[in-house]
Length: 238
Length: 238
Figure 1: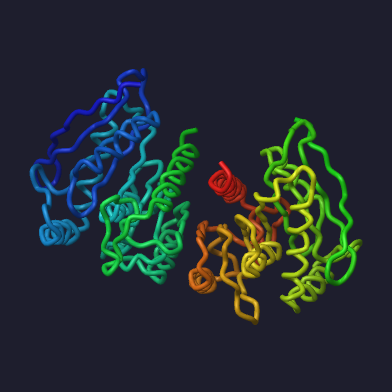
Figure 2: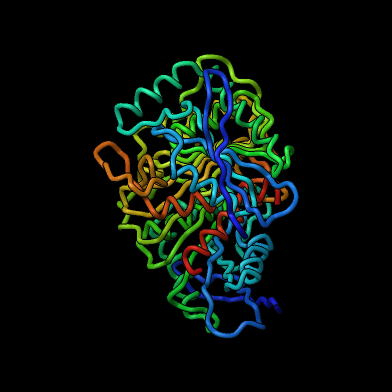
């Protein structure tokens, strides 16, 4: 196994964007491809690390960029502004992430018929929006994502949906979790929501340590959620 | 691998009971032991089958009896009466299932320090009650269980808890599911609840086919929940 990475610069609605592809150079033949959708700070080493971890599992990982080339937050004020801008037009958000799916399908290492997307925090919302857009993607996985639906009707959801959620997440309350279940049912999705007790937002982010704001790394939930994702991808393509 | 079964007749609060032990006769040394708690019909081939499946995974399975030797339902009226009787005194229910844990620990094939319990429907409630009783068991897994808490305070819960739940289960609504999460948090439990969309009560029971009453086998949820249980037991003892 020889995991490699390369940058990918691409045009999408709203400008130019830059992400990172990770793949196993020792593997032959097309493999399933998985998008990695970043949190509110923007695409960074965390996402590239997840793309590499996916490559180690035998997939091609694509750590996508939904903010724009060079547009990354360096503090929470900037993050809030960038995330607010992206969230303010859900049609553009959906168009941008659909563009990354198209790029993933076109990669020489990727089997265009086997694709999925995972996302963290804001990225969880973005992969849910990918599903909500009716995209022809096999599955999406949200890790401590945010659940608010777009202000327009969903298309029927053909992707399988797995939501990995901390019960104490202040950004996605139990009521909102139940509402998401109803929304996904109404859209015809095959869905699962795993709730982890005593678990806050950002449970996969090793640096998260702000319990007053409900942001806290949790090694157990991090491990369990990654295992659940592996089972889910195995079910899609195993 | 040579899976064997033998009956186990035992005394417990309220009388004499009869369950079934399943183990791999080709294995050597003590293994983790897992109770299998029956649904409202009473201990039968379904539970023995689960005990055998657990033995195939390298554990000792004990398909317990909480109704009494020879007391099995042959129709839903009888099942309702037997389940009602068992549920009418939660202290007795907890004492009975704790007795089976004690028996499990005493089996020659079982490592007394590594035990868990799984249960289906009424059996899900019973394994939750085992946890609620403060039993020294490593973990409990409820498959389409019922969530109503006993009418007395729980002890602190030391067992890890995994609840595998159909979102459309009329016997355990979304509100009751959220309430269970709160109850388990208050009792200090390490817990997870997996909600399966478009899934009713009895999703593991191959014969269940009464959608009007919310009883319906679901091959996907059956497979996913068994996989989740395997991951959970691996985490306990892997």
